[in-house]
Image (tube, rainbow, N blue to C red):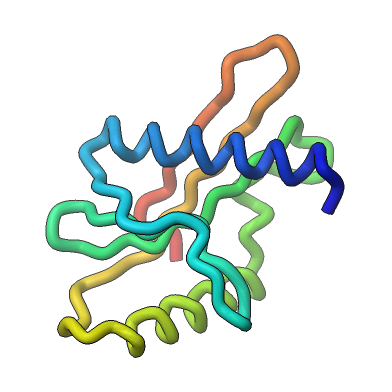
Length: 119
């Protein structure tokens, strides 16, 4: 991944975190890494644990940011969430998967789409 793409991704994750906090979510963890991959954000929405995938794009030439969360990525996120939940000492709470899709076009305000219970 190039430095530009990495910086765009980090900026998108920061925007998503702020966006979710403004909606009343409490962000618990960021960039949770395992051998299998990474969960961008883990948050609480009331009593529900939310695994958040953040996708940031600069345009739609190759599809929207939300469309880039393919069935393969969904399967991977389910595996990562299961591993995360299995390593918790506390009982497993209710949980769901959300997607925050961000389009950052040059010279425009970012467009943020929040898909609750995305899959």
